Image (cartoon, rainbow, N blue to C red):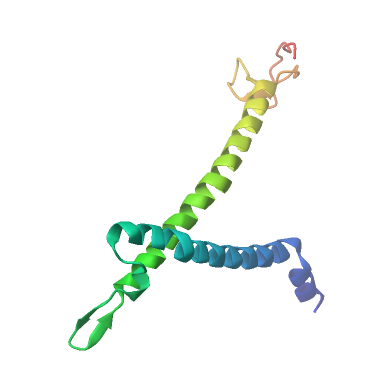
Length: 134
């Protein structure tokens, strides 16, 4: 029973649960934004105020292609927001950290592995190397 309790209280599980809840609320927010602003704005140009009302019928079966258009717009809006406000800033931050790490290391002249600029011996091939001034 202790293992199950540890599993439930582990930080990763709690973080995952919070992420799922935040993701669901974020999806609702983007859907509401799309339905309130983006769809009517596109409807101005298409002459249709809401896409959700669009459908066609074949032999009495109703195909709601307007709902699909709304879902597609919501997906594209969500993807754009995530890319420009999450992915790009994180990528830039990681790039800065990588540049700082690259400055702190150099290549061993014997085995070409990465070693600290302060190192006097290579960890890969154990050759003696002259430390570089930092």
